[in-house]
Image 1 (spheres, helix red, strand yellow):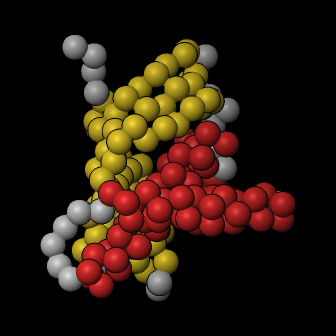
Image 2 (tube, one colour):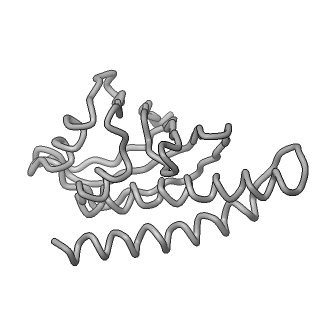
Length: 163
């Protein structure tokens, strides 16, 4: 159990460094150089947490997800269903849910003080209830900085259908 926590902590730190570097290089916006640096640092932290979320999904690591999600977290899934934090975590634990890949294909982050909104395209591959699937979804994640820690308070996704 402690090894899992340590591994998750290291993963979060490493993805934070990668995410900060990525966002620093792609950040756009108005304001002074000091404001831009601060915004891209916070944006990088949020993007790193998004990456950690994907890794936690692939590993079915509900302990890592538990750290990322606020107590008031709500998820609106591709079918329009709503899940609370506990329901969302239970769905990840389910033996029927077997993800093999969770990748964010593209995303942007906008930071508004202690709030951030991430919009992107997410691809997940796996099996559920014995059936293989590949989904591409457009998502919006809302993050709030609570007591100095970024936590996701809401996520919503829409299935992108092939044309």
